[in-house]
Image (tube, rainbow, N blue to C red):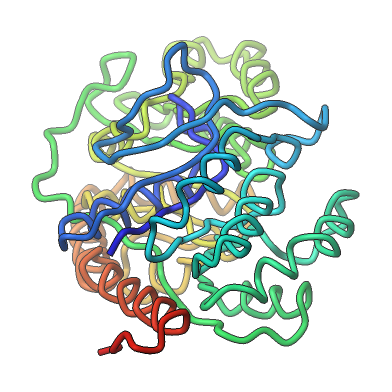
Length: 388
């Protein structure tokens, strides 16, 4: 099949986060099965737009800011819409990584007008919201885009219920987990920035919901207790870097600036190996639907510490792939202390994490489910197509 994956934004530093990682993993696996899959998206941060991104073919178009101060929601890409209108008909099916924004919502409408069947995957991004743009976008485009899809793929029961609140009764709802490539061989642990042999890592956007400040506060409590451990933040700034920097630079602990560091963003294709080099991966986010970084950590055999509102918390707890904590600083400090004091626990949980990622979230099973949804979408347009 010829498959278009349509997403909002590609940048060199992976600023759009998990949805692009998911799309790339899916495209790579679909191409391995012999399908012609490509990612179509708006882009920022490139002098010259690439034709490949993290090993998969892409068709990228310049993003423009239509609504100041609206974040990703205020971006547009008229050139992308024109390309889809001209070339979309050549595809058998499209996969729209849907969000409330002015890139993918109009793209879904163009696909529908062209007669191209599509499925949506919302990644927890279309939920009841008080954002001033949510109500008009839902009325004009979101509900229509979801109702026109052959299937609407969700990650969690919370997302399924949220979609129902936004759209009302919705046909074609189907569960699809994020998948992760199997990390075949864990890299030898790298030195942390200060030369310490052990590292605790936060790798995510520095945004308020991710709570990087809590990571820093926990590190400040533990750096004297564990002098052989470095604490590193990796990821693009989305508003929290000034407060993170202030916490480090105003600390009275002389070790803070040397042992707690922001490393900047990492190229998306390097994220998995970067996580694999750490001893522990920490994501203290609130209401994180289904974080790809946590899946990548587990795939590499790195234990994870997540909060109880993380969509992967139940599996992490059930399989002892790390620790699930409440949302308090004390809980994070206690969990880190427990792991750092017992290296054997790190090894055991790392092995459990690797098995969980391979057995439950391997890309082969996810790709097979996608092909089934695509085939049904094509069959709805062309009833003569047999669906296995």
